[in-house]
Image 1 (cartoon, rainbow, N blue to C red):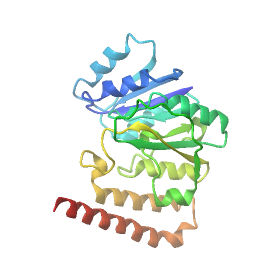
Image 2 (image 1 turned 60 degrees about the vertical axis):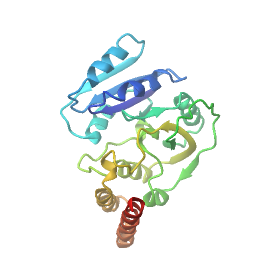
Image 3 (image 1 turned 90 degrees about the vertical axis):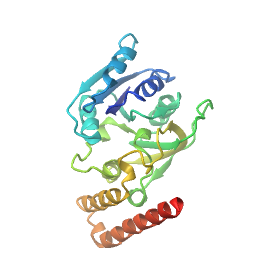
Length: 256
């Protein structure tokens, strides 16, 4: 039913915990597609040691280091499930994640892409019941990325590939592309525990200027399928630059 795509790179410190969160899901009909993006540590050994004796359907793919978009695209190409779910190698899902998401998707056929909220705290002992998701419009998404990648589940027929030329904001760009044709929704339940805070110093997203450049490229790409944005493009670029300046000064004053 689900194809779970996990890109990883030198993830020996976190991959076991991530895989265990999948094995402990209350819903069990899934395939795991792990795309190793050129790891040189013990990532592969840990994966095979953990999964080979488990009754779980999984595929391990090794590729030369090409970036997370290429790794996710490889997983998408191999996926056979009705729904595609993304998970990163340092994040952890709530045990009910697949169960709750499946219930929503099966009972709401208009939902093509569903994202949910995240947490930074270990509060996964709580049991959840479904809330009602809300629809996110194309223009709402244009102004703000509504969900982190490990929260996204997409119907396979609605999914497209990540733009591998983009190194920043590539996830936001893909959700926006899908939103131009399909229906996307947001569920306000924190069903993923992130290994690091978005825009923290630990990953690519910390490079705030590059993120803004990626966001501007996303706006330019969107002109291909939303011609009306041509008039709004200067304002969108200014909006992105204002966000950069705000974050820059916030970081400066936090450090001083």
